[in-house]
Amino acid sequence: MYPLVKIPLFAQKDIYTFSKEEAKEYYKWFISIKSERLQILVREVQKMYPKWELDYTRNSLIKLYEWFERKVMYRNMNEEEKEQIKNQIAKTPLLVGVIDIPETTFTDETVSICFDISVYLGDALIFNVNGTKWTQKINSTNNIDYAQPLIVSRSGSPFNSRRVTESMAGSILDKRENLFSFSELFDDLVLKFSNS
Image 1 (cartoon, rainbow, N blue to C red):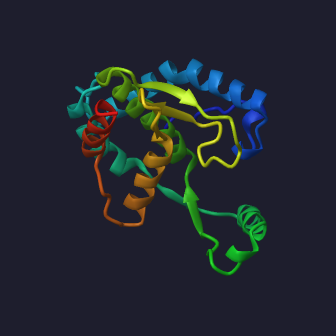
Image 2: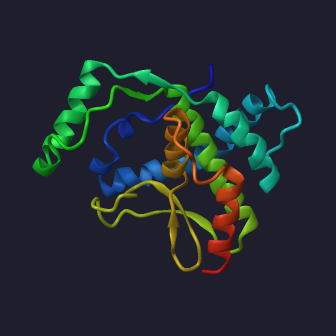
């Protein structure tokens, strides 16, 4: 079993309900566990690819994507989870009856894998593109990326590596075609951030 990310107790709620202080604490926690989570990722990937290295190169992302495709999984949602989604949709009456309640969601292992790979993708961009860094936007809870760790370039253009990684996992599991593999995404982002 893939070692799970242990979210701090105060952060085990909807991220959009974080106060600014909680958001800042969450970001500090994220920065503090990055190295540990990357070491877990290395150990797990090396079980399949013993020579895989955490070297922040495009080539490392090719094998990582192959590994990722084999590891992501769904599980069936329970009734309580479905009810929470119904309640969330009910807050926007125009969406009631338009958005289907899903039957499945990511396994806890898949969530942790996406978390760790998103850290690696972000760090790979920082390693390869001058002026990129981790940051967080906490000005408005209306921002889709509120309180989440983001990569920004000098121009401030944000990239939510976790959101993209989870989207790619969903595409794999739903048998939709991904627009990018990790290496192709990396190429696109390096170009984007280098020119900003």
